[in-house]
Image (cartoon, rainbow, N blue to C red; front, side):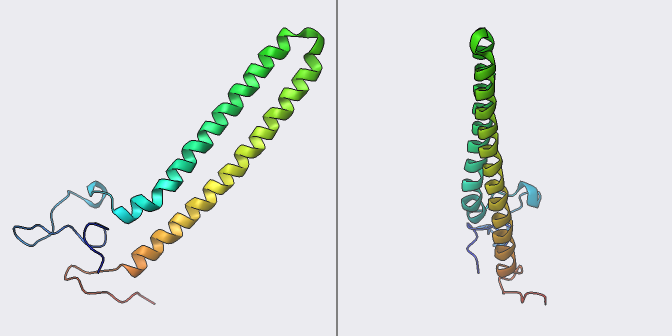
Amino acid sequence: MIPPYLCTTHAPYPNTTSGTPQSFGSASTAPPCLIHLIMAAPTATMFAAHTAALSLASVRYMSSLRWSSACASNRDTSTQTSMRAYETSMRAYETSMRAYETSMRAYETSTAVVSWTGRINRSGMNVAPIG
């Protein structure tokens, strides 16, 4: 049995006074389970890093365009350079987004494994998986 503090979706928090599960209103308002929080933390961190990378790439591109328009003699060369830098940063962002998508698929798989292996009925008995 999964301890109650690890996953509220698989084993509800017991009410110490009556021995019945506490009511959280619905599954969506239940406190997040420790297993899912631990699994989601790297994904959330990666998403924030990727968003910051995209913002930085956009800022670099816009500032390089401003700089290139101020220098008329080097305009073509500097614009080409800034476009190459922007394209490189966008390729890096696309790569990081593919990594993010891969991590999300891994998270979904791990969640499915947790729910499949952690099926517990109200009495605390393990329920055999279907199939």
